[in-house]
Amino acid sequence: MDSIFSASFQKNLLFLPFFLTLKFVRLSIGIPEGSSLVRSVKDLSRRNSVSDIKARKGGPPIVCLTAYSKPMAQWLDPYMDLLLVGDSLAMVIYGMETTRGVTLDTMINHGAAVIRGSQRACVVVDLPHGTYEDSPCQAYTSARRVLDETGVQAVKLEGGVEFSDTVHHLTDKGIPVLGHIGLLPQKAENRGGFKIQGRDDDGWQQVMKDGLAIADAGAFAIVIEGTVEALALEITETVDVPTIGIGASPGCDGQILVTDDALGLFSDFTPSFVKRYADLGEEVAKAAEAYAEDVRAGNFPGLEHCFGVSKDKK
Image 1: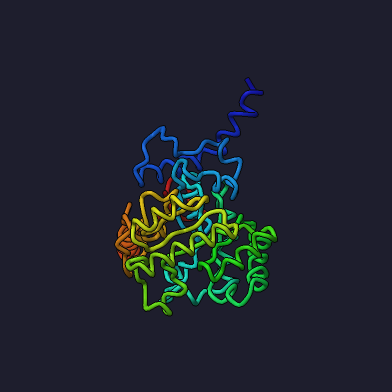
Image 2: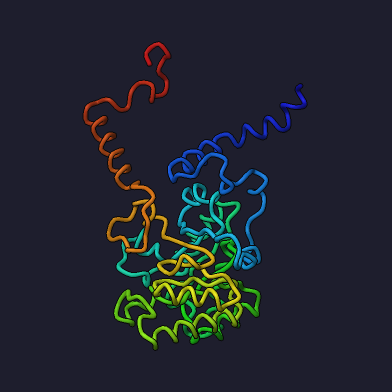
């Protein structure tokens, strides 16, 4: 009996707090008990590679969300195929008006945090504005830092035909790249704002050319953002790598959202393509209100929260 408890039983006890957290997150977002989306401990022993993601072309949908911190990565990881450390953190975390103000050092710090909080998902970090556009060599230097200093599996960069040589240079040197075409947040200021792409024939043809060029350059997958649905579907059916949609098409090989949008944690604005799965911002406000009331009423802390107090006084 002792030998049984010393091995498998004790190991399972170590995972108990983790599984309780998973159950809370699962119930919060409506995943039923026994769903295949919930990973087993065995599944958690190996992280998804870029090859795993690429092999999902035409297969089960690739599930992706953004993550910027270790705690969020821990909560999301069991359900995600890919976690993106997006430069959207400039707006969501740091309150900037666009994504262009975030630095490479900042992205590296957040990427390392997400790696520390995840075990299963493939983790990708955005190359921020100003760190890859000048030349393929600049892009390589930035991407090499990201991979070496974080341990993530790949980088993402925005752009189409004009950056196909850069993508080819990176992949040729062993840097996996997630492409990003369509609406490009880093370049929105130069394009008249956040506008849906592909509404006219010229726009349609340009985004199609972008998708083909980035796929041919060696990207393992491509994010398609903010395009008309039929265009995103046509690109998905044309390129030989998976597409990941955000405001694109249900026909894409995968989907991604900014987690803070989906969970109601970012209230400045909500894009029309977002489905909100929770209103955690309201829950945070309620908890803060309850805490404030307890402190002002003298109800917190109680003696049970203090040290050096005898048990009969608690």
